Structures are given as structure tokens and as C-alpha cells.
Amino acid sequence: MLSTILTKSFSKDTALLILRVITGTVLIHHGYEKLANIENFADAFVRPLHLPFPIFLSYIAAFSEIGGSWLLIIGLATRFGALAIVGTISVAIYHALVTSGFNIYLLELLLLYFASASSIALTGPGNFSLDEVIIRILKSEDTEENTSSKKVKSFSQESEIKEGKNKGGLIKFLQANILSDISN
Image (tube, rainbow, N blue to C red; front, top):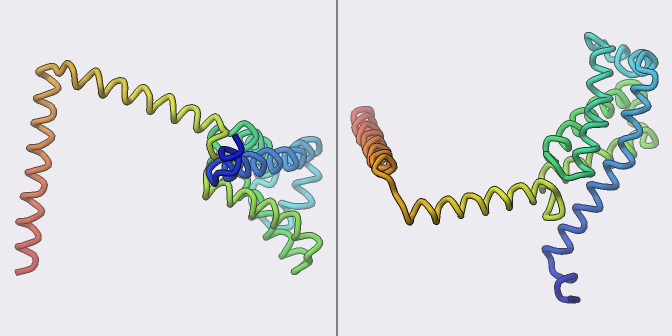
């Protein structure tokens, strides 16, 4: 059991789980705060950037933080949720830089959220997520289909495979001839 806990894979997956859950949990309240008073948020953060449709963009920001946080927490469509958070936090970082300059006290939390969400988007959710469960189910169904299709092939499947080979051969033939004509 100790060797399982100390393996690189288990440690990485546990670290990603902790990062996902903590990031989602502490970020989710920002979205709910935006929804609580959307007009004030739009006046304070969106209108100073002179962006169009400030109320609409404020709702987008709130729902991307709430939805993205929930996706991180449960590990479903994790990269999509992390990218939604990265987008919203990028605008927040831009706002902080435009309105206050390089003020580390305003930027530090935003940069931590940005780094966490970017790391999750780049590495994926890890094995302790619903994404991984879905992938494993789909892979097991795919292998079951492959083994059953190897046992019994119908005439239509064989003809489709032959047509695919002919198309690949035709494409290769055309590429070889077109490339040879161009190079001459």
C-alpha cells in the first residue's frame, strides 16, 4: 500500500485533485458575489475597460466562474471549466493592470487563480475525476466492440474497409503525382 501511495502517478493525481477542488471551492464565491449585484460589478469592473454590453459580459464572467468552478470540483469537462476561468481571470488581471498598475497586492490572488486554472487546463484533471471515469467507460466499450467485430465481420464492413483502402491509395497516388508535377 505504501508503494502505491508513493508512486509518481498517485501523487500527481492526488495533487491535481487537491488543486482542482481547492481552486474551484475558493473561486466559486466570486461568481456568486457578481450575481448578487451585477450592476455594481459592471460599473466597477467592466465599464472602466470600455467593453460593450457590460451587463451581459458581467453575467458571462459570473457564470464562467461559477460553472468553471463546479466543473473543476467534480472533474467533468475539466479543461473547458479551467479555460473559462483562465479567460475571466485574464480580463481581471488586465483590469487590475489598467486601473492600478503593477500592484502586487491586487494581482497576487488573480495570478494564483490564473496559474492554478492554467495548470489544470494544460495537465488535465488526473485520474480522480469524472472525465477519467467517462474515458475508461468509453475505452472499455470500444475494446468490447473491437473484440466482437473481430469475431464476426459482415460483408458490408469488409466492403467499407476495402473502399477506405482504395480511397487512401487514391489520395496517396494523387499526392505523389501532384507533388511530382509541382517539383518539376
